[in-house]
Length: 116
Figure 1 (cartoon, rainbow, N blue to C red):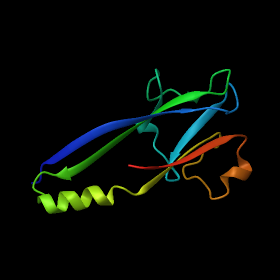
Figure 2 (tube, rainbow, N blue to C red):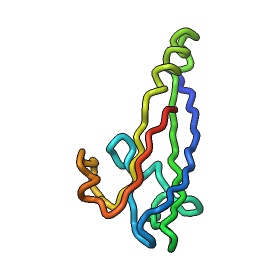
Figure 3 (cartoon, rainbow, N blue to C red):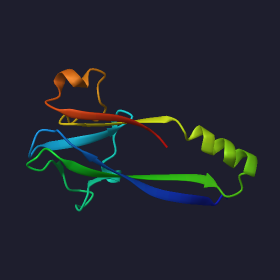
Figure 4 (tube, helix red, strand yellow):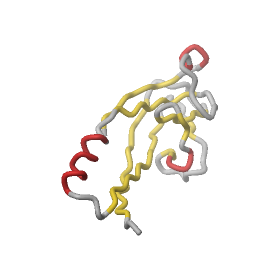
């Protein structure tokens, strides 16, 4: 049996210029992760709602693991492989998977790519 060492961290980011007092959905690499997403100061199950100025602060929880019996050389390689781009999209569209041309259907959206 392998023991897993979990590292958990959260990404917090502010989004400006969205439609005021509107509900949004966060997509990470085109998929929703509602159990890992929340609005700052709210609970995981609460909807993501912009304020009257069209601003929202989002918290996305990331957990990753590397088995404890992994050799050091493999751990270093795993860290390099984790440095892949992650696309975050916040939009008013509620779909299980975000479509390629979501920009055409969205009332407003924000998009950013991060390297972790």
